[in-house]
Image (cartoon, rainbow, N blue to C red; front, side, top):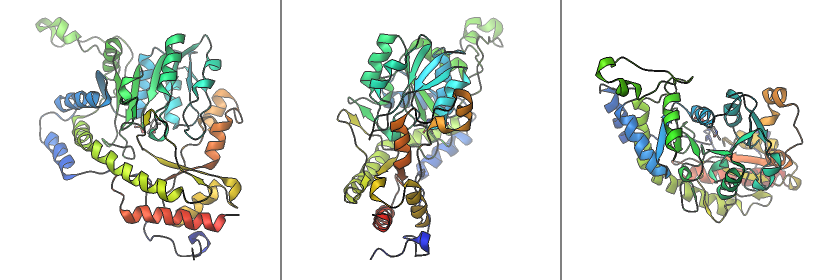
Length: 398
Ligand SMILES: *Cc1c(COP(=O)(O)O)cnc(C)c1O
């Protein structure tokens, strides 16, 4: 007997709310942060340099530039790509708004490209027809942590002379052709917001293998000030610096970088824990008729930022929103990633009403649901989530 749904006045599956994502901070993480607080440097200093070095190694890139957020990472990447007013950038409509916003910050215009069914990443087969003589860059997103089709997108960028900026905010733990996400695009952007796979409170990184891009990113994060000018002018003018381009204060602090070092050393462990949870979800949810579990392509190791299911709404008397409300009432913190970017009022104003233009993304949005996934989930949390899915699906099944 599944029992009456909590939303209809029944007893919820659990008494306390289970969030969809949550950070894990260890005593060692705290120790590292406190050490910085007791030192002479608290903002951009030696710990930041160490974090950047270790992160670049992890990501399989030559350089990493740490910044104040994933959004700042994206913004600086778009500037380093040389985007200007009127330029066009091809990206996915199925992402967090920050992906497209970072394009708009530069005066360039995002041109959305539909996604692939089941994988939710930009569809390379649909990119070429969107390229115009104003197109400068392609910005794919590794949805939920599943790498986008990096080889195909790289080929398009190379043959059309476009810059490839990968939004890897979900995929710090992923691999493509055995390589991490820093190894493929001209720049890859990562986020360390607390719901992501590792955290610095707020924070982000851009990785690159290009010397010139690296220098530009360093300058842009620090007001556009040329870092070498003090060296160049040496003793005669230790006070001297030059601002050569319009930059920002997007610096990360050593306090955050210390937390980042702690988290980075635990990332493999985080990923192993997530993989176990995913295996349990896959096994249990595959048995619930009408719910589709995530798929993983052969050349990919999924980074498992999010675990999303697709609801076959024809099989139920409730739509995705019905599932969302019923599961929330059971105290399961389900969520929705993402409202297609072109649905937002700002983008309707900027680009006109594009509803209907991206049928796969729009269909995905109408049926997708994110269920809880974080490293420290307990066995009971996993069982509660699966039981709540069963309870709600059984109640609503036609
Ligand atoms: C989280 C996220 C961002 C923004 O990162 P912040 O660190 O929150 O600024 C950008 N793109 C995607 C896909 C994200 O998930």
